[in-house]
Structures are given as structure tokens and as C-alpha cells.
Image (tube, rainbow, N blue to C red; front, top):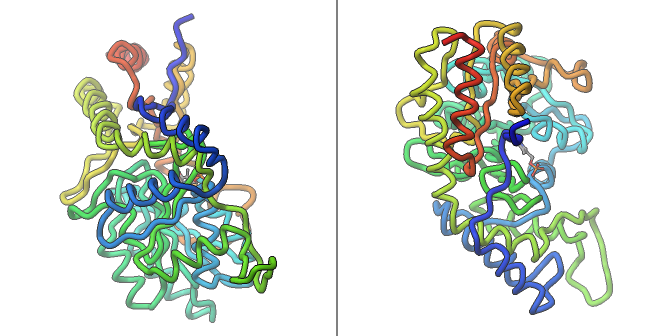
Length: 374
Ligand SMILES: *Cc1c(COP(=O)(O)O)cnc(C)c1O
């Protein structure tokens, strides 16, 4: 059996281990320290647009804190893109609030501005004005930030920008992770850069960043004794893991380049196959191509292809199953147009790691061509 080809595996740059060794040498084995500060500064310098960063234990923790900071409480409703990973929606429920799911548009696969506006108007008519909107840059493709944010602004609803998959992407030349009232990043093992597990909250507001760190470190009031007047969390990033992140920030641009190359190679070699289509970047959109995805004509063909790849020891994965189809969210309101259901049936994520070799890419391409007899 040939070696396994993974969907998206960690890819160290080379300097991570020396940062980690430094953490050991200086005994900063704690969820604070020089690497945490350094990592935050390096992300801020990368994102610019006056971004302030709080490094956290996961993207999910960042989303949870974002909802708390926007005062989302028991009984509230929060709008969320339906086509996403469950981590976008779960923290809404941690707060005792209800997700309201919004379908996608065909040209970005992200939240449809039209459906969003219909949903906001309908929720307001029902006496339930949404407390926040969670919009997602899926697979690295930016959502239509201008449209989504202008709708949100006109109803005075804050936007949480889920940029977990989109570090390195831009929209109108502005980096993803800088659009939201609060944005979040993820450094999980499969993301474009990783700390093994980790995340960040991004804001332009100094008080919000400070409050995020306060909540992430058990909400200790400013007193010598351990004094608490609110509920806290243990969500700060470890200084050891932040060391990995500092090494990864050094190679982020290379990682974006390599993932975009994967996509270009798939497109160049597979677009002659009539049954396969790709999601091109609309004008002003620049995707980090975190995952390269294709659409096939049907669920049967998509599943056949997935099994064919598996037979060759190649991992692939259907596009995210929309949240409105998930058993755990079946009682939540949703506003649908059929797009995300259709994408789920037809779409497949191909191996996309920045560490894929040419011969591994060849194996994937050959297996796909064989399946389609191309
Ligand atoms: C990975 C991911 C998250 C969660 O990040 P973790 O660091 O794994 O908690 C949230 N949203 C999306 C869209 C993701 O892909």
C-alpha cells in the first residue's frame, strides 16, 4: 500500500523547535510569557489595520469570548452561516442562545447577503432582533465583507468574523481577520499554520482585548487576594505552543503560496474533465486556498470518487455538512435557498497540505483521472 496522503497535515517551518527549546530553557512553561506576547505582536504586524490580538487556547474559545464580549445571553438569537464547521455555531449554544442559520451564495459559498437581510427582517418582525452575526470565510474564500457588513451596520448588529480558515486571504486587498467587530483565528493542527491547538481573538478596541484576556485568565479582579466579580475561563494560549506559532508566522506567506499552487495544479490538470468544476476567485477576492475543493455532478459521483481516492490511501472529505442539516441543530430557525445543500451533495475537499510533494499531487490527480476515465 502506498503511503497515506492526508487532507491537510501540519507543516513545520524549521524554527519552531528553537522557540520551544527557549521556552524550556527559560522555564516559561505557562499560559503566559514572552512567546505569547511575541506571537501576538507578530500577528498584529501581519494583519495591520490597527489590529489587537489576544492569543487563546483555540478558535472555539475565541468565538465563545467574542459572544460574551458582545453580551450574548440566554434566550438571545445569533445569526450564523449554515455552511461551516460546527465550531462556528457551538459557542452560541454555550451562551444559552439560539443559532439562526443562513444559507450560502454560489459565487463564494459563504453567507448570502440577500438571505441574511431577509432573515434579519423576519426575526425583527417576530420580535427577536439578532444579537450578532457570525460570518465565515469558508476554505479561505472571503465572504462578501462589503455587503454583509453594510447590511449588519444598517440594522446595528455586530459581526463576528470567523477567519479560522482564512489567515492569509484578502478581500479588496485587506486581510481577512480585520473586518469583523471581533474576528477569530484558529491554529488547530489542520489549519494553514498551527500551534497544534490554539486560536486568537482580533479586535481594534483596546478595552475589548483587555476584557478578552481578563475572561480568558479566570476573570481575576485587580486585587492581591483572588477576587472575582464575574465568571472566568481558562482560555489563554500556552507559552510553549505560542513558540510553535512564532516559527509558523515566519513561513505563513510560503504556506499560502504552496496551497494556492496546489489549487492551480488541480485546476490545470483536472478542468478538462467535464464533470469537475472549481470555485474561482471573484474580482477583489484572494483566497489562501486552505482547502482545494471541487464540485462533481451528484452525491453518487462525489461519494464514488471519495471511495476511489480512499482505495489509493488518499484522504478527501465532503464539503462541510450544513448546520441546518445537523441533528443537534434541527430545531433552530434557518433561512434557506438550497445552495449549501447542493454544495454538500456535490463537493469534495482534496488533499491540500502545503507539504504535499509533486509525486503525491500526481497520485491524487491520477486517481481522479482514472475514476473519470479521463
Ligand atoms: C477550525 C475552525 C474553528 C475552530 O477552531 P479551533 O481552533 O479548532 O477551536 C472555527 N470555525 C471554523 C470555520 C473552523 O474551520
